[in-house]
Image (tube, rainbow, N blue to C red; front, side, top):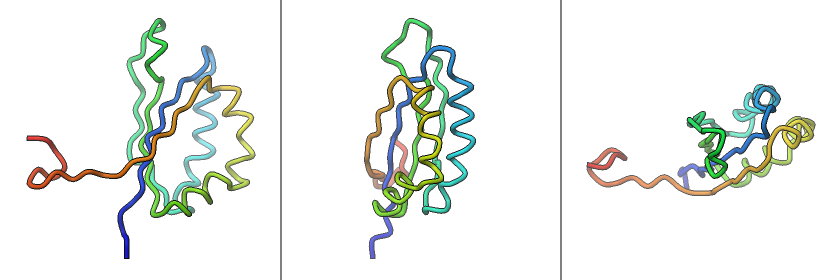
Length: 111
């Protein structure tokens, strides 16, 4: 049985003046994650400067027990009802799928 979680890194570029709208969206959808065996592993707000357009405003690392769980979360009507809010607040979002790389003898940390 495969117990390895599937990880996603989400880079979020928020439209100028829309950060509070984005935060409101997050407050509505993030609590849904556990219903789909999902976890918010890490959520970072970057030190982005106004002229740094290539730097995202936030970086999220999420995990799910399976691709099926992720797809169920992605298509869930409770989450989808807030998509207009997401689109009005977010200029661009990039989702990157990956897996955990455990380096032997380092407990996941580089020596």
